[in-house]
Image (cartoon, rainbow, N blue to C red; front, side, top):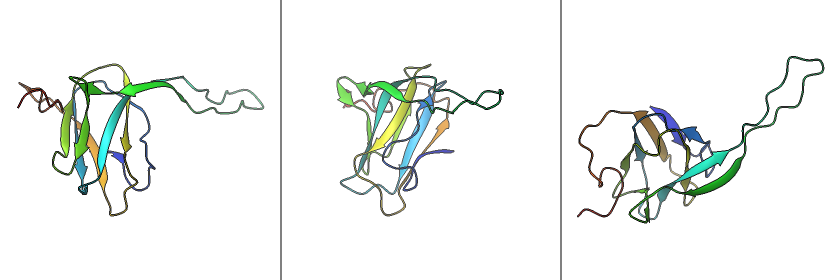
Length: 129
């Protein structure tokens, strides 16, 4: 599993590209804590060149973002619902964010999965009861 958020990452994860289905799990969330997701557009940044002197490295920055949602409701992880399967929008970059900075060892991790027969609830959508 790969770590998205922890007390060492700050309040927002690094953007990552959704290449396939992933399952995201939050460990140790308290009642008032939640993790939300955003779709982000990032620029390419700039790597150092092989010329002398090398150019300055510029890290990619987020140009635009909007909440990842289902049925108009943001997809989020909570103490009551600590997991979600995300399979769209593939090919786009996402990032995760805490609503408060963790203090007690909370961690959010993800792994590529191939869960068949997904329903909207597994995708974090509150539409189906």
